[in-house]
Length: 409
Image 1: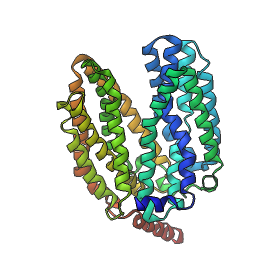
Image 2: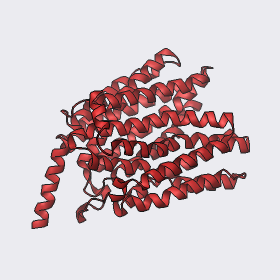
Image 3: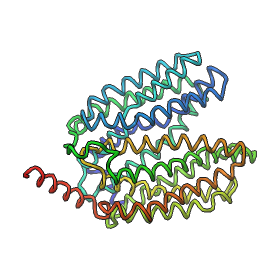
Image 4: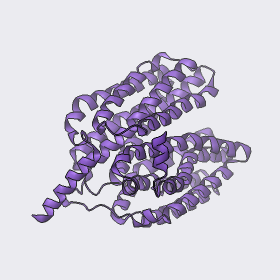
């Protein structure tokens, strides 16, 4: 804990955390705000779910493009375009009453999603020393996980106490406030994209990134299965109210896992940490299909969330170590595109398994997907990600020296 107090006293750290928080909370609220609004207007749960899915899928598929704009133009211009566009889209959506109007608004809303999270991550390298990067990544991961838990709760309370339109309005206000804080932040305005070597302009031709993308596809599919399996099995066991606390166990323990890793000294290389934490994720996922809604599933999900909290921090470090120069934002954005798309596919597959086989089959699919991901990391990925098998600071020094030598040739 002392390490965190010292970290928070670092100049600009508190400002960056506070500046990103409203936008992240807005992101945590948006899906349920859309759901409740559409359900209020149309009285159709099916349309509400479909509209939410349209926004989520379009946001995931276009994340790479939005990230690339930051690596090309800096942060101020893209944020100044996407934030007003997104807020306007939310307001327009809140005035729709027809099916076509709702779906069209959700489609545009997803495309306009502001790159708040993508903008935050590269700033840590600017404001904290190399020794504190692991703590910074842990704090950032924790805040994203925490707002993903708190946001739906806030959206639900607002929607049920008032209505879905009010929840959408609150979501838009939070994003506007958060966007203004980010755009006016000096470190954000002064941040300049990294120089890009001509040979590293195409991210998808980079072997290390391809490996992380494949792993993300498998893990994203498993996560999509889990998202649908937990509420489905709770409902079929006539205990639908347990779905929310069970998901909270998963998300809450991932927050704790991230904080534990962030509070430790960076004496483990990113690749070592990623390998070990992925093994813990696999072990925690093994008993899932044998549990039922209640204490056994809560314990299993708590262990799984804790291990995932570990893995998320190390995953960020691995990506930071192996990504090509000039892709500080683009690399993470395209990984989110890949993972988000496969999560959507996993959700669709999970719905089929739940309806035509059983929710237990969907839970078994989660375990199988995570096991495949872990084996891939240990057997195939690790030998090819050796650049991440050293402290990030050292890998970046080597990269800088290489750039200098190339410039002198």
